[in-house]
Image 1 (tube, each protein chain N blue to C red):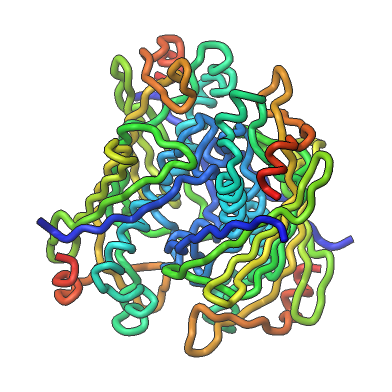
Image 2: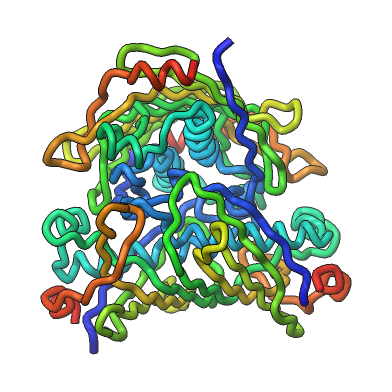
Length: 139
Length: 139
Length: 139
Length: 139
């Protein structure tokens, strides 16, 4: 069983749309936050520190996918469970499940890379091999 | 060739994150807006009008996926091309490609349904068969 | 001393902009959420319930103002303290202070009204007198 | 009469909340974007270029205020007119008016500074005197 982390979030009024329910795009934002909270819980330094020390600016996404099982609305607490499903040489796969109590609200899958900036153009980035020490912290 | 529509959006400062590039979650927001702009261009009424006339509140998502090909940053114009790839009985598949000039920035795929509210609980929704007249407008 | 409530929020990566700090617009979102959390803590029902029972859809803003004292960034916890500073016949004034530990990060002031929808046009709203029972809960 | 600029934005579904109208926090985001569009129209370089050339990361806000005159909803076009109302030594005041046709929807006022990063801590910033050449472009 890989290491996992649960991030709790209370849905806000502003997260909901005229259909009265969470706008789906917010799940991607929350899964992204849950990814960073997972890394923090595992002991991976902040991206500010990693950029200063090794140039790594974070784990940008190559691909993201989510399925929306049940609607949620404001005032409800969501527990987002996150773990790494697969480690490749330069990319890894994160999984997320958002639950309200026992009800699955949404499930997500992200393919991410560790990235540095291209020299000379701060808006261009490229993937680097996954740092072994951080992978070890997260397994 | 199915009907398609192009929605132009200029990336804003607030859309970009500490990595200096667009936060990926925004592509899902923009694809969602491009879906609605597609419907508007095809002649489908606003969801306000459809809710009043037939109870249909819009086209919530069952599943969303996107691939991020190249980073974009603020001040750049993105052209998002959208079309319906497949029509099923109760769901349909929208596709989106965001380009900056000739460069593909991101590609998206959404599975959507036409939905009405459950009687008695405005935050519960259920799918209804795709209205044939609107499908005809969009093909 | 009026009743007050503290809402804690951990700043997310997506809340920060290319300057590496929280984009100021988020403070307005968080103050809005803190307002709703204040009402919940005081026992005011959800706007879903109030809309069904009395037509009141919430407390839209007439005016909002904030001062930004110090920057904050992701991974930091903010404690947002909220209270009602003044009750008028049809409007009230909420105040918010966001702190990181002892450091004031931002201060906000909102003028709000209790509102119902105009008959016949769900996107038009109008203020109603402040319900005395809810005011009593919040004082 | 100071120089002004008009930025057009079409309100999106995701910008609207369960009250069916634009969530007020979005006006602050759009005024911020309108500020940057104003600078671009006047010939001020992107903050990416200014950070590289002079260390200036942009014009963070010290204070923001807005009044909400009429609700707006998705599918509507807003024209946001922006100008600088006052230039001080280290700060300046921007004004914005958002209109839908002839109807004023919202008015905003921002106090901004030109800022650089503190040496040694990228998340700390400080104001610098307003560059005379850029002020001249914007008057």
